[in-house]
Amino acid sequence: MQIQEVKSPKAWAQFFKVTQRVYQGDPNWIAPLEMDLRTIFNPEKNVAWNNGVARCFVLLDEQGKPAGRIAAFMDREANKLQPHPIGGIGFFECIPNPEYAHALFREAEQFLRAEGAKIIEGPVNFGERDKYWGLLVKGFEPPLYMENYNPAYYEAYFLQEGFIPFEQILTYAGASKNIPFERLAAVAKRLKERQPMYVEGLDYRHLDKFANDFAEVYNASFSVFDHFHPVSPELVRNMMLQAKPIADPHIAALAYYDKKPAGFIALYPDINPLLKHAKGKLTPWNLLVFLAKKAFKKTYNAKGMGFGIHPEFQSKGIFALLMEYLASARNKVRYPYMYLAGIRAHNYEIRSVYSKLNVEVNRVHVMFRKPLEEGLLIKPFPFMEEDEEMA
Image 1 (spheres, rainbow, N blue to C red):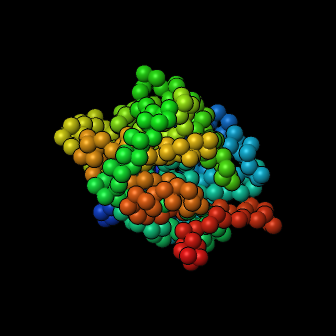
Image 2 (cartoon, rainbow, N blue to C red):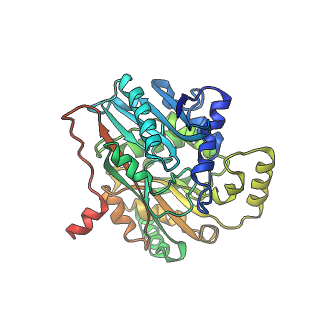
Image 3 (cartoon, rainbow, N blue to C red):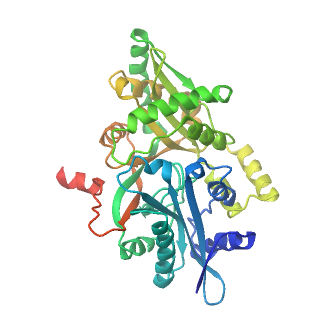
């Protein structure tokens, strides 16, 4: 067994080959695009590098074949708001071998300790929280685009390393025909007749304005939560530019009240089913096949990447306004099924809203934390099961 830091093209090729062994024969597996992962670990394309550091490692077995991998990183800008320096791990993959898994965790931990981390969280992304976040523990179905998928045995590896389940991330799903769009649209129509409110769809000609207003609403909406990670307009702008090839302005919008940004909703077409053939490699041929599939594709699942309402406007009917925007005849035909992802189990307000939409929890991811100092307390957020027990 040997662990190497990923620096060379050969090492990157080995890093990506690990999944070929892990998911061989798994009909649900859809490989993430290698170009997407390379972007995350490219200092010129990921703003998390502006004040952060990251390393990727690959484990070779006794025959020199790739058998495991892991990434470790720290975002020092995000850590400014934390009581203790937090390091992250992600993109962990390993064949069924506890010894290999332990060696990978140990390598990542040594790096993060040297960088000053007092807590490790994972599996997470080096950057935005709407992608590659959490370990799949329930709902082992084909993954959505940029969603973590993993074998069930990974959970035991995290627990054996002393990681504590810290945060539950829920994905709700439901058929568009069952979502009460019409009722919400009727409410929105009445509200607009009496109040200065309106919706603007995503327009790349005015991306800077969209990014500024989105960041304002997002930060105001979620700053009340512990361990909040603010977003900058620059980060939002980069996210939207990356999403431009697949973005649909009919399902991404900002709501305004008296010309002030009051709420947002952001969904995009899930293109993962169109990428299964590529096996992570967007070669010219695979790209041609993808474009051909996309040209003939009439319907998509829609994946929600974010929803929030500014605290100042939470009693103004902004949610109904945004639902009215989504409720177009075109959207209900084009997106017959909707996945509302990234909902924290402790976000009771959003869960309460979704409970009225005839959608149900479809899959569950968990983010773990591990203290690196004796006596450092990890206090997990409430989990969905705890709510059910109290009901």
